[in-house]
Length: 401
Image (cartoon, rainbow, N blue to C red; front, side):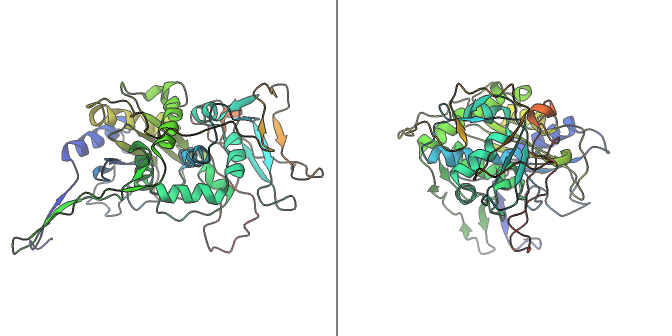
């Protein structure tokens, strides 16, 4: 290619590249600001429309958008939500307690406890917990739907990075790329059909032959009813949840994310025609950021999507096969009338009558821009081990949403 033997036409829209770069520069105008990366995918065919990094190509050839792996925080929660809806769990009639911290035992009563912080009070539906990014609710949810089922769902939807297989994955413990998140959410945008992402439109050879692969039909990984329900729930993030700052005038769904010590800020969101992920952070080390996902990443997403996603401005299409849902009950769920607002804020969920909470539940941490007493994202916990690192799988772990 560099010597002129091939001519490659990409799927990248240079106009959208400029829009993405301008959005980054507008939100992060100073040389001392953190780095950022954006990937935008057409959900209908997997075509990468924009892949932008704040780093200049002549300074580094490392692609932050496609190669850089960082913990996604709460932007990983939609994979647990999708798993739940796919299993028939109704996000409106299924309620969990939402204490400010909780102690769980994902590996059984005699394993190490998992201390999670980041809640509210009282009993909360999955819909409300998604909009407000409540860690303690999603920690209980992942134990109900199965960690392995959630991670498998994420892979089916487009996440290609290795996942740990441990419960803290639901809070973003495993590293992923910006491309992973954009493509994973694109599956929801296309009604449950996954397309592998591609940046190649066609290739012209020296002899004049043109290789122009047909757009693949994609693979259905969830029903259109499940995808529609998840999108309907996730519109709450922008309408009344953690990213009301950055709503656009078209139907859109999304999720904020911030990791422990505010080292990474994310916003991933989509319309029926565009799925875009934005990451803000330091690529070389974990340095606290001057804000959360809603403060740093969501404004970039907003400014980009105001150009990329407002024409056409369509509703998410009604599904041909609506999801069959019902209220779910387990040892973790509660009755909608349950109110723990007078509790001390720490809850232990035992698997035997003898289980007790540890004396040092995780507190503080990322809040997606909210009071840390209400929305702290599981801080104070070690990241989950990566596959094959020899770390005891029973250890506690977790990161901030």
